Image (cartoon, rainbow, N blue to C red; front, side, top):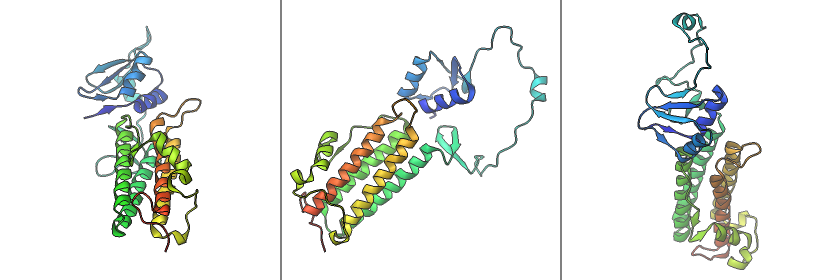
Length: 259
C-alpha cells in the first residue's frame, strides 16, 4: 500500500510551487503529519487517478494541446537498473525517489550500522556469560528497530523505556553514576576489558547516529521535524553510558571491569 507523508508534500511544494488539491490512488495511507499539513494549507485530498498534485489554471489561461506537448523538448533519459530505477537513487517512501546521498538515507545507513554494532556487543556479552547485560543490549536493539520503523513509516516513536527506566530516569542516572553505581564518570580504558570497549563503541555509534538525525530533520528557524527521534537517540547514549558504569562497578548483574 502506498503512503503519503509530510516529507513528500513538502518536497512537492518546493519542486512545483503552491497547489490547492492533490490526487492519490485509492487505498493510499495518509500519515497523521501529512493530514495536518493538508489541513493547515487547505489543500483538498482526492482519492482517484492519476496520483500527484494538481492546481486550478488561472481564468483565461489557454489549455495545453497536443501540438504544444509535441513541441516540448524531450527530457534526457536517466540510467536505470534492472527494475527501471536509477542506480544512484533509492526509494525514500512509496514511489518517491531521492539520491542515495539524501540526509534521510544517510540516517538509515547509520541506524543500520548501529544495529550491527549492538549485535556484536550483545554477542560478546553472551559469550562472556553476562546474562543481564545480554538482555539489556537486546532491549536497546529492539528500541533501535522501533526507531527504524518510526522513521520509515513516518509514525510517532513510542517513549523510550529501557531497563525499567523512563526518559527522565535514564538522564538522571547517566549524569550521576557515583550516586547510583558507586563510580564517578570514568572514561573507558584498555584495562577495563574488551566488554567495556564494545559498549563504548556502541555509545559512539549512537552519538554519530544522533548527528545524522539532526542533519536529516533540521529545519531552519523551526523545530526539527522528528524531535522524538533526535531526543530518543540522545537518551540512548545515556542508556549505554549507564551500562558502561554498571559494568565498571559490577552492579546490575554485570561483572566488574578489569583484566
